[in-house]
Amino acid sequence: MTKNAIYTIETNQPIANDVFAMRLAGPTGALVAPGQFVNILLNGFYLRRPISVCDWDEAGMLLIYKILGKGTAQMATMQPGQTLNLLTGLGNGFTVSAATGKPTVLVGGGVGVPPLFSLAKQLITAGNIPEVVLGFRSSGDVFYAEEFAKLGCKVHLATEDGTAGTKGFVTTALQDMAYDYYYTCGPNAMLQAVHALSAQKGAAGQLSFEERMGCGFGACMGCSCHTQVGPKRVCVDGPVFTSEEVVFA
Image (cartoon, rainbow, N blue to C red; front, side):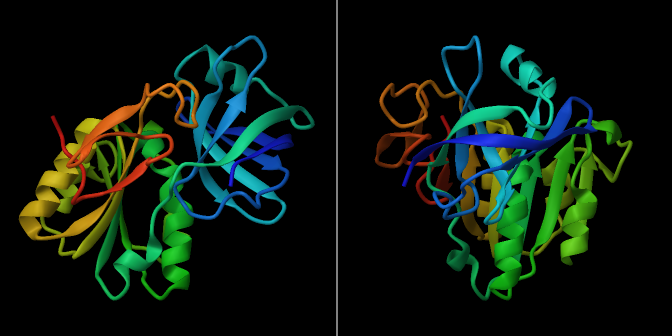
């Protein structure tokens, strides 16, 4: 169920290089699964900005975003008390029950990390404590490693320059890990690498795609991706797809 509502900014603070955490007060009844996203209307911009939801409760939600353009740069200047118009409850999220009884790993790269946090909380509530692999370019880009650890997850860090954790990519850390199920979110190159490595291990999983979106609700077809049954729209058919259905060109 999609809902359009006005939200009030409670906090908006930097937590890593060009990465901000914004806490919004407002209705969250349209959010039903980790991995869903919101579409934010910003003054002066025709297209809304899609941002994944890091966490939520009855009072509001937490968004973590990276400054990637003029829209997110504007968001970074906003102060507590200002308001934003959001479309919420967008997309299909992760299915927690698919990992029941299976050794599970969560794999996030950069701004693909946030939706895995609420997923980890729900998995733990269901009795499945996952291991977590987080990949970043450098130590200054790392965020939420401590928050995952506080949940009780074993956290593995990988940075491209080796300034934090293992030097390399998330697949470097995953190489020697044993798991039967995985959830991953990040850039397409990372998703493809995780998908291929996990297939070699005989592990199935769910992948959340990061695609540039026009409308956010399936009208423009601008965010289509390849699957076993043809193109699907990331904004409404995803952003989460199973490892069995995705096809990397």
